[in-house]
Image (cartoon, rainbow, N blue to C red; front, side, top):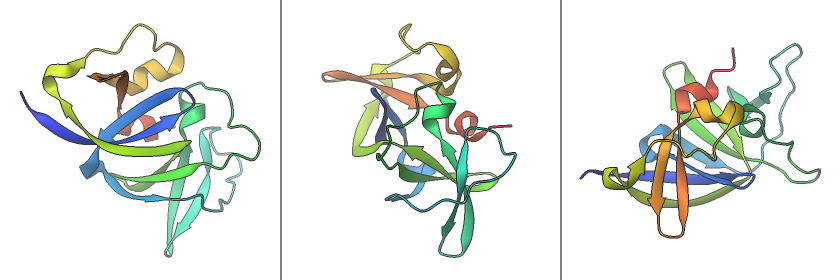
Length: 141
């Protein structure tokens, strides 16, 4: 049995986890600059201490309805081979331990465009934690 630490967050009614080592930092809402002619999943660009970061809207990537008016997203800045990318999520949750013994293939309830972004699910007390495939989630080409 191996365990890993997972940084967790919520998007709509789903709870996701990614390896803690993939997370550069978590930021409250940052003003974004829209990018003309960019794919719809690109929420915009944010300025992170002088570094321009692409923000990917996970609601759009997962095929979920838009965020309600007035609800601001949170930025989970992740490390990728191409540099930092921000994932726009609804809420940040805690860091949890996931065990390989509790990991299963994606449940049948995960359907639509989001299914290809889920590696599997951890069975945690009281809920499932979906393991997000970060490289696929940030690939909006």
